[in-house]
Amino acid sequence: MRTQVGIVGAGPAGAMLAHLLARAGVDSVVVEARSREYVQERVRAGVLEHGSCDLMDAAGVGARMRREGLVHHGIELRFGGRGHRIDLSGLTGGRTIMIYPQREVVKDLTDARVAAGLPIFFEADEVRVAGLDGDRPKIDFRHADSAWRVECDFIAGCDGFHGVCRESIPPAALRVYERVYPFGWLGILAEVAPSSDELIYCSHERGFALHSMRTPALTRLYLQCDPNDAIENWPDDRIWRELHTRFAAAGDWRLAEGPIVQKGITPMRSFVVEPMRYGRLFLAGDAAHIVPPTGAKGLNLALADVKVLAAAIAEFYRSGRHDPLDNYSSACLRRVWKVQRFSWWMTSVLHRFPDETPFDWRRQQAELDYVTSSSAAAASLAENYVGLPLD
Ligand code: APR
Ligand code: PHB
Image (cartoon, rainbow, N blue to C red; front, side, top):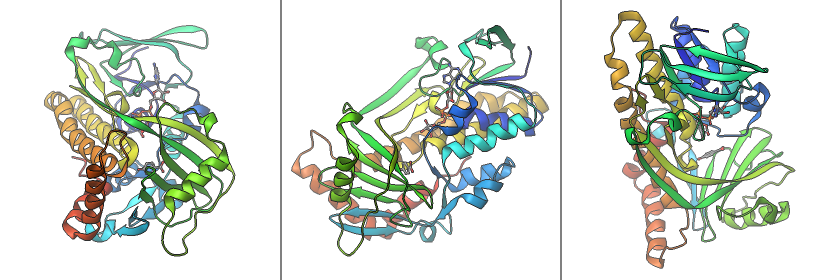
């Protein structure tokens, strides 16, 4: 089959790109390795920046998010056993963040695609991209026991960190920047109302902890752990004990417990490839960059990339102009590196490092003290947390 844009992957990047292109009158075909149920159920991130919410609205898929999402105006930084609120809205001229699970974003976008009868292949096997440096790149795959070929003008590699698109670029054409952190996050989903109305980022001498949420009845909690630890070493009662220890605070605040319905350990890395383009292949989202989750930026970066890409592709079909496509990589990378810096900073200031010295610990505590007592420092955190401008 023939299309204008072949999209590999139906995570937030691929699903949003397909949607934005359709609204601009550009045809696309989406090829996704997993089943529709799998991509819609996968437990992932949960914080949308102000600009990501606006993009959901502008794409015409914001209605359920506006109904069911939880608007937050602040976050708490907890250290030395005391909580300190960062007034995100007050420090950013009224901007907010939205708690709305990534899987709901993907569900809204993929359901809209299916309902519109536009082509999306789930459970595609042996996905390959070829002809990237010619003018008719193609995606080959198997689906329901048949071989398929999609011939395209452009391919969008939205297939995540472990996808095939980035791997199909000759290594000499890419520069890779990477940092692997000496810790991971043990994450749980518990069926209990959140213990606080806002997210709590907690620095403790035993390691970082985070209190987040998915809905008014589902709490999401994380603990810094050894990245090579096995989840079998963490029975539920050990997880709760460790969470209670790290979140302990002056006053009568208590962390509420409930049945743990999901748990897992995720390693953490910072990763960027440059450029985000090779010939007619454009990389977007986790295929091009990974941030550690401490700043809650992965999903938002993916959406920001495809906003730029959709506009550049639409402009090409409207006027024949190439320059927005030629500028795609550098336009995205400017923002990507600022978000990398912020995610690295949040990670560095809140986690314990195996090789740190007592000096480093004191410096971290002083940095948290500074950020929560200086309005200039708090404003810098807040403007990054609610999201830098998308363009
Ligand atoms: N062929 C087709 N699809 C593939 C292939 C392949 N070879 N490999 C992976 N995929 C699919 C995955 O199944 C997934 O649905 O590509 C999609 C990539 O989605 P994500 O990993 O969610 O990446 P992205 O859309 O860039 O969104 C980034 O996801 O991992 C989180 O924290 C990250 O929130 C961030 C967001
Ligand atoms: C989440 O709810 O999963 C979450 C929230 C904030 C983060 C990371 C993850 O910084």
